[in-house]
Image (tube, rainbow, N blue to C red; front, side, top):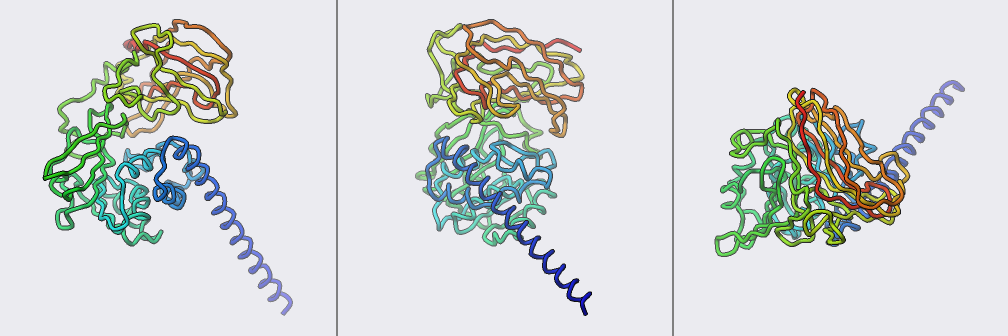
Length: 405
């Protein structure tokens, strides 16, 4: 009898400790979600209260693999398999706010991915219909969304650019993959007075467009630059304009272009604490400035391009740089720098190089840096900025020169 009591007591203690562990984990994730909303979403200008509430509620860590759960609430794209990623939290919030969803809306999403964007929408609207062309992702997302109780999300395994005609028309349409042009079936399935947000452009140079349907016609407004990973399917393979991986280049490295006059540098993505500056540029009328006063806060701009490491052995990056009162932040990556990331054919990182790691103050200086290209590299991301460092940092006339292998 004593042995039985001891077993029962041990089982009770084990269950109680397990419950405490789960509760602690949930509390920890809730804190991380709140920090994510405060630092990566509200601080970047998102104000819609229903969007903020949804971002605080949806458990983003449930939409990534177990080894990435601790990174789930960083403002970063994370791999979800099948060469796809889960969008950064800011992009999800930005697209949702721009869509301006209402409680009674029926929304069509193209590009389910992990299901995270659908879950955020499901917290706000009546029904979400979401389509994913990659079958394993579609099946996994449907299972995940049901297990989390999102019964108002309906998942279709199929070609999203054909839409979902039997459930049309839709009050809102959100496209989370980037076509070369706007698919006509989506235009037809958008309700009169409805809104669509879609990233459109070349494979590594895209911009968000907000479309409003009035009197059967679309009003188009170009928004910020963005970068979505290449899609899977026929539409991607049939692009008319394809990048040349033997000739990677920097677009708008002069930082002169801002065609929609939104105060952001065209061609550069995921911009944080960035401004176009006319403060003594070295070339042309403008340079780019990063300014950060809070250590650890992200200050950056990114640009992606194709590259073939079998043909290119190294890169030379030429640029002008100056900085004032720069101090590194708390983490190892919180340094003012140019960082080049390389990815292989399945978008697994195969190398990165950080250039500069500046601190203190320095006037304009011409810099040439050499970066070795891994043979497995098929894509690269160039990231410039303070990252998590504090101070002011300026760049101008950034160019890349390839050196054959």
